Length: 287
Image (cartoon, rainbow, N blue to C red; front, side, top):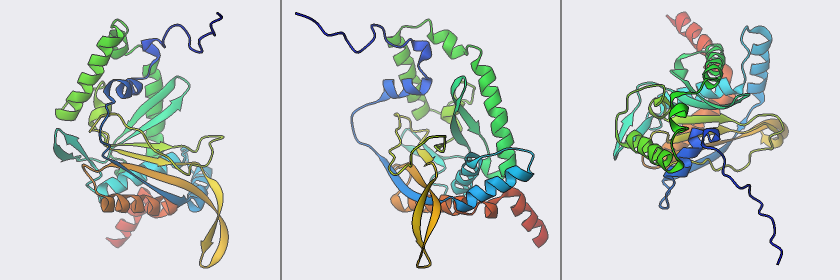
């Protein structure tokens, strides 16, 4: 009797090649209820594309829709405090700052970047900080971290215990802010911009989550696609992107989520009205 060859390789992927976030999903996933809500909407990106092109042609810092999305989320977090919160045990705690996490694909692999006080920075400031953060993450990733040096010497089962313990502590305790914990401590939201080359239109999207009460929001902006819309009873062609926001019903209700999404859409469709430098100029003129 001939046995067919297995489609799987003999050995699993080595532990040091598995990203930490993948381990969070692996070691904390449990069957049970799902407290998350996902609100999908659309954004007219016509003004945003023009705004980015104009700023890049005259500015000293190159930035993309990612920086506008980051600032939009920061402003929305400040305007809607329920979104800028997290769970510790069964209690809700609000953040004092508007911070976001941004996963980026780099030559050295995926990097998770923390941007702080994004609502108080201009688009150019955010672009410069993002470039600096990415450079730092790449430089640090070229050297084995303390976690990598430690876990490479641990068996897979022990690694699982360590990941579950870390997530449990982040869900129930006020953990100190360190390089090892700041991604689970300082921001309630992960933002994604999927406008990378060759990405298909994002019509439906279900963001995943692991069993962490610290990161409750996920904001995802899809790639641009040309669509026909009715504007003032006329059919026009516009550049549209899908916008999807995942929230936790333990901290927000549907009405609060809708208001949060509405604020994001307003800023993304009119980014020039929410430029930090322009807003400061307007305030000075009024004074």
